[in-house]
Amino acid sequence: MAANITYREALNQALREELQNNPDVFIIGEEVAQYGGAYKVTEGLYKEFGPERVVDTPISEEGIAGCGIGAAMLGLRPVVEMMTVNF
Image 1 (cartoon, rainbow, N blue to C red):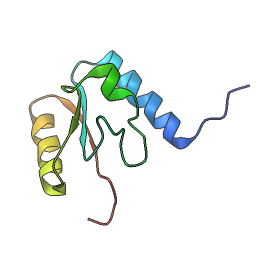
Image 2 (image 1 turned 135 degrees about the vertical axis):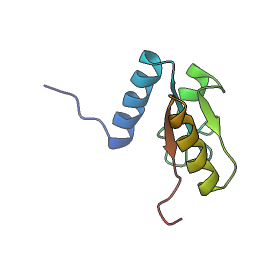
Image 3 (image 1 turned 135 degrees about the horizontal axis):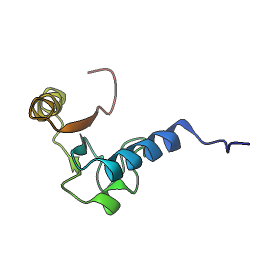
Image 4 (image 1 turned 90 degrees about the vertical axis):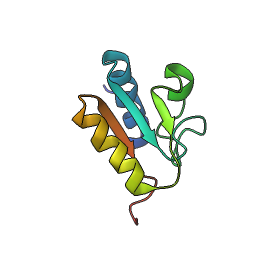
């Protein structure tokens, strides 16, 4: 029988797997690094993968989205986290 995990834990596990398996994957967003994200989805990933793979950004949703789009256009695999949906 599979163990029950929270949605947050499932996201964290999926991100960890992708970071382990693909060097082109990285995470960007507000407070995703040392703080672990507003909802702790990225908790522990900064410590495991470092500042080049888990990157805090300024509070600028347009800038975060632009970085993700630009990185994807160059062949990287960005995971862009927006803190809330009301922007």
